[in-house]
Picture 1 (tube, rainbow, N blue to C red):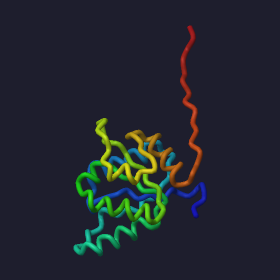
Picture 2: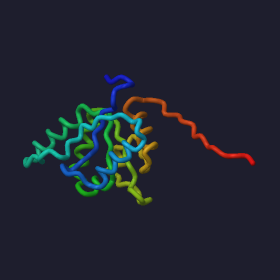
Picture 3: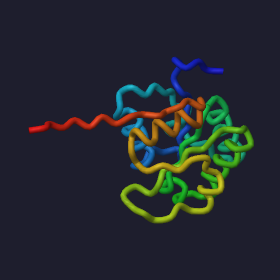
Picture 4: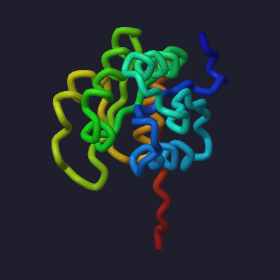
Length: 151
């Protein structure tokens, strides 16, 4: 079990190659500068040729994660492969945070909504709050401060 000061271990669904959605997730995670995480995803590894070897490698990457992130672009590119990742995550009792389509109000595929514990838009604060809630059950209640001048 991880303590509150330990980085959150997360797995971002991938297809053994970085793509725009995959890279964008990390841009959003790093934007606040105060969210500490460790990715267990290894898309840069050479993709195993055999289907069962691929699945075993994905299980190895997902197992240490506290929370899984899935994007619709990656899911639509290879629904069977990402579906396997989500199915294993749920079998291993891992929460899934799904991101909406980037820059679109298109409805998420059922293959994502069936597994998602929480669905958020592409916003660094929404994403990091969802990850804290799902991975550590941390209360992320925040207050916005609005500054204004009275003349």
